[in-house]
Length: 137
Image 1 (cartoon, rainbow, N blue to C red):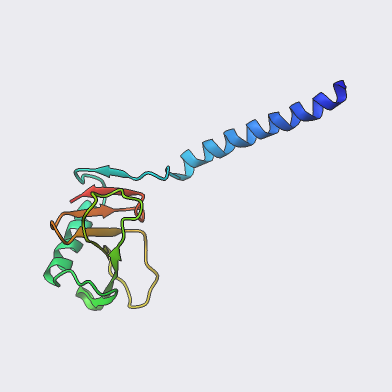
Image 2: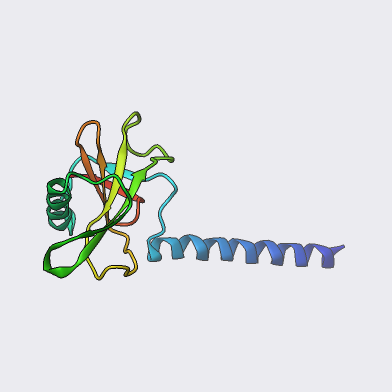
């Protein structure tokens, strides 16, 4: 009977070590919980870039159709159209649209930087990590 206990305790010890490693790794890699942080100001790196992009998107009337739009310097920028706010991180009841912050060659891959505009109120949020966190501009 003692031999049956040993493999079970060894298995449990390995499980605990693996869970500790995964927990440690999430802190190093920057994986965040499912709930986004929603901060009422934007003082982090790239907020100025998000404000500049917001100004340009505003001058274009915040298009609501997903697609590529001409940008300065012969580049393009993309809007994905309606942002559903499925996880409910942003205030409920708004009609949101998402816009890329950084321009690039038409058709190039999108990065994680977005602004999300509440078309009902005009309040704009910056997400530097594809909707994991939101900073009010």
